[in-house]
Image (cartoon, rainbow, N blue to C red; front, top):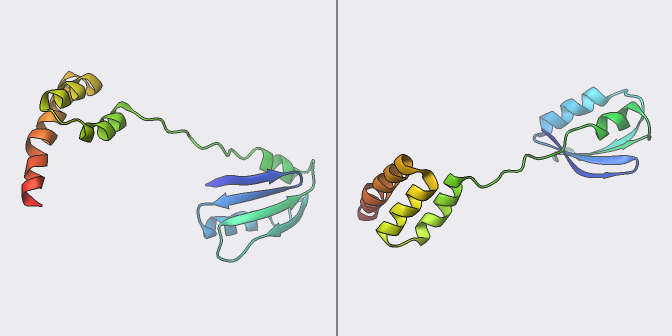
Length: 124
């Protein structure tokens, strides 16, 4: 995956998920029109590309999708993070059923709070 670290006029710094991916990108860019220079270190996953404005490389680098998918908290995540703060079993049950629904909340409460956690506390 390619991500932007920074982009300025005439240069862009890219981050790759692996060194092999960076090397593959370098081989593919070899001989491309508009590349003024490429700077990198051997063991890093970043690449600094200097290019001429208006060239094909400029177009290519401008159109690399660098948006990370924003992850939002789901109901299950919220349940997971807030459940340890609740102490009373009735509050835990109602919170689970409110957030996760009737069936899943009841099963989650029964399995986790009634059987799994006491078993783990006894064994550890």
